Image 1 (tube, protein in one colour):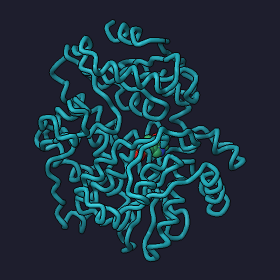
Image 2 (cartoon, helix red, strand yellow):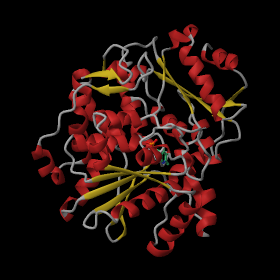
Image 3 (cartoon, helix red, strand yellow):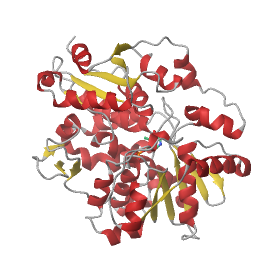
Image 4 (tube, helix red, strand yellow):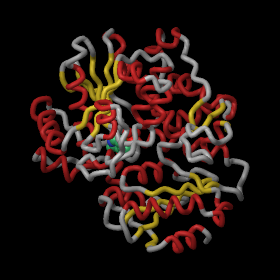
Length: 430
Ligand SMILES: *Cc1c(COP(=O)(O)O)cnc(C)c1O
């Protein structure tokens, strides 16, 4: 499979090159040259297939012959080491729980898949290792650290703003050791991000083979299709149209869902639910794509002013706005509305959501008014414990600490403090 740049000013590349480069040389996102729908018989028999078999069918055309089938199956098995329950919340409303992985957020899926692909591509080049360099404001870093832990041929360097991530998040970044290094930056998230960007452009670091691990990377984005298929499998016997609502920040998750639909998965409608960072809802209202600087909210993993994957969604619809609007809605909610929804879901339905899931629930409820016969599914993208400062006071409860969190919370933090780009460079050149 070849991938082209959505800026149309860079050479086409293989799956391997796209995974290693992350972004094309013209700064465009990579997009697959062909998308072939799956055979209808696959959907007829989906209930008899395992999650691993479903995932293999969904992704194999995007990898092509660059990873042998047996190895790809192994990578998938290593990725899907946890479950994806579809939990009934109310009549006709389900939560697709994506938080049962090692760091308790859906980003575990993409991080595990990408790390193992990169490990495979690096297996024979012991001295030309890749270094994954990421800046994190919270969730991404933990998923990347855990996903890449112990993967041969890949070093990981994570930059995070000192004192600006939660205790749990910091422990998830700084306690693993082995090939994972944490740099604690005296500054805010944007300082970390700026240093990372500078390093990617720095020719004196070319020998480090730096690569990124955020959702622009096709190996993080595409495996996020898997759980839309799993939810379909779980709900198929009810024989109703499906509406999915994704709490959206960079729009990687929802873009993967739309790709699943392109492959033939029968999904009636998508809702991109956002917090007050409402660039896409405004676009759908007035036709103008007008990104704004991000605003801080209680659903902070979605505090994104200019969603990077939106351009991929437009490409999936060949920039046909009519066709796009038929399948897709987007609604925005304030923190106050989010807190009210959290309480409502708990008090009426007995379900503990967290702020991102609650935003997803609100968008879903609104869209279902137009689809009275449909089943609605919102993606619950993180475990409530990851947002305990919001969830516990809002609901007046104390959450038990899950085993995945317990195991890092008592480990000792190991990080290197840095203040400047020069110090980052010095660290990378050690
Ligand atoms: C990253 C993240 C999101 C946003 O996902 P996108 O794919 O960027 O739209 C939502 N919820 C949580 C908990 C996240 O970590």
